[in-house]
Image (spheres, rainbow, N blue to C red):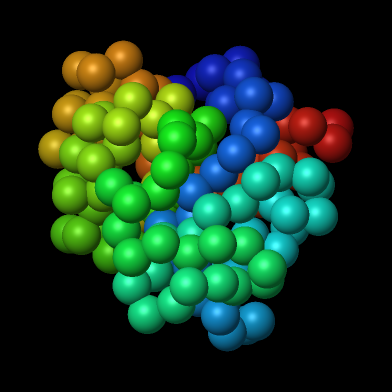
Length: 134
């Protein structure tokens, strides 16, 4: 995915689902959710063990999140990504973002076949700093 496509995802991001959000402040998913909230992005979390983190609602699975989201940000092991992407495709969410060290080509092909752009193995915060603050 080229920089212009990534910029379009970042500039269009008003509502994000953070899959694998953690209540622990030292976890990357927590930091990203906090950063997004600070930027005015509506955040919904996905974690079956919690109902609210950082004041944002948390759902047990992506399928339970009401309404579409602009970006599904995935903090899960690469081998656990396909069901999340399948849910995002079924929901017609607008973009998939697999955080650093998360790659799943099968899931990416599934999303792209549905017309959903996919970013893999990149940190959304680092990409924002690189592309939007320069």
